[in-house]
Amino acid sequence: MKIASFAMLASLLVAGRAATTPPDILPAFNPADPAMGVRDAHYHPAVIDYRHREPVDPQNWRRPNQERSPANPGAGP
Image 1 (tube, rainbow, N blue to C red):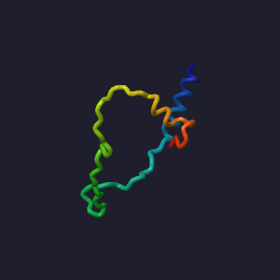
Image 2: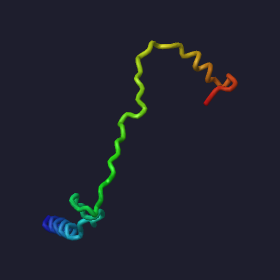
Image 3: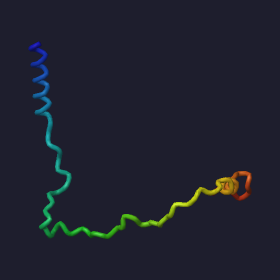
């Protein structure tokens, strides 16, 4: 029992020492530094193709199906 707990403690100690901090990917950013520049901020609307739609009554589905049927010449996308 003592050997198992010692082995577990030793493995945790070795794993902790092997871990390193991640490298710095981005340069240090200071908003007050004029050399960093200013990024352009453009307005992008969240809803571009909005169209108001009202609920409608159910319609007959047979006509659109027959228009798109393979038996109908010139049908399909």
